[in-house]
Length: 205
Image 1 (cartoon, rainbow, N blue to C red):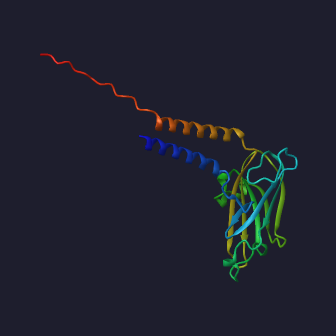
Image 2 (cartoon, helix red, strand yellow; image 1 turned 90 degrees about the horizontal axis):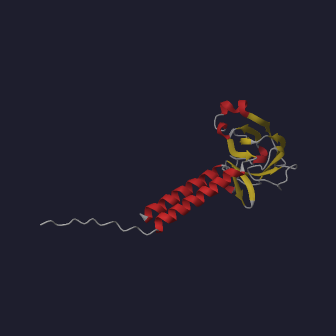
Image 3 (cartoon, rainbow, N blue to C red; image 1 turned 120 degrees about the vertical axis):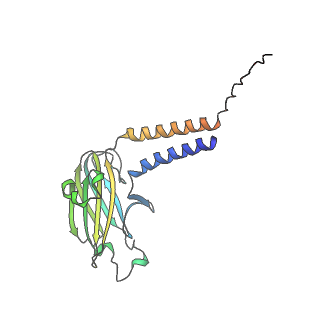
């Protein structure tokens, strides 16, 4: 019984952490930088909101709606020596386009991209290694899509969902649910079982 209760708690905790992490999928911390992986390469991501009270740069979610500057910097030689050959180019030599889509659920179907496009930066090369744009974001869910095409026709794609002005209540209820699940699990695991009542049958004779 104790083993079952602890297993159930671990399952619930894992589900809660998975749901929290899903909002940051695609944007990760690599060597103390906020990075997006595109094929074998890395783009360093930074979000700035000069009119926000919160201090930037921001990694992934943006704390409030409003004017935002997003910067993507190519990390030099991020492909590693395994890709330093005639068959691969550095990102600085590729045609790169960037798109922001409304509603993260639309990121996988390219047929819907035009309909849901919030921002589009056409393909071009960035020999200086830095792509940036400004946009007045409204509150909601978005997904960024970066595509890079090399001279051999290979296409590398990165997708990273993010939220603008996410509700703090989401984190509060997730934390509350985590604490509740942990408390219930430990109670079930370590409580003393009650003694079962004994039934007595009188003998007649």
